[in-house]
Image (cartoon, rainbow, N blue to C red; front, side, top):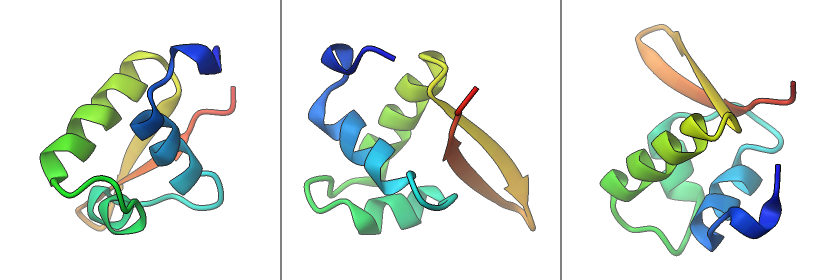
Length: 69
């Protein structure tokens, strides 16, 4: 992963997910400089497309985590 290619918001999402798997709303609550859930969804999609992030469903909730492969 080349950190120079990541935006500050993308880095904030990665930092929020470093220690635990979180839902989109949990990520939104942890990051102060993002106020809209749609922005979180966009960032999650960008990180997934880069191969940095993965997701899974548990009890009808989608959780996101950092791909460490």
